[in-house]
Length: 82
Image (cartoon, rainbow, N blue to C red; front, side, top):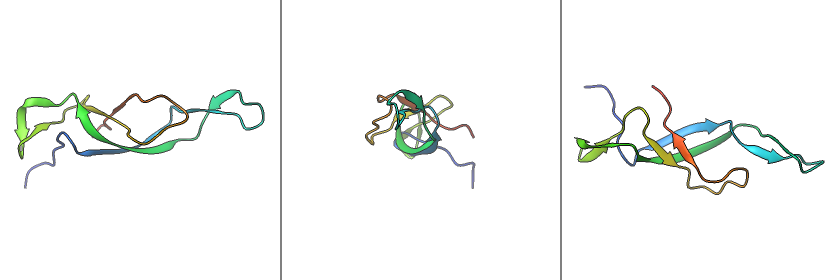
């Protein structure tokens, strides 16, 4: 069997450490704890390379976290390396 590959629609599962949350005492922004997220790969795939009929994901392919996030606006989520 060959090396596993990721394609458009596969889930990115990782932890985001870039959140800023309000300080409970003062309301001032402060770094928050890491939050888990899951996002489908939707951007940066190679349309001309198909794996099981789906565009191949490559280094730099990204997705959007669909879950609501009160701490940060929706932004691209890079796929983890490896």
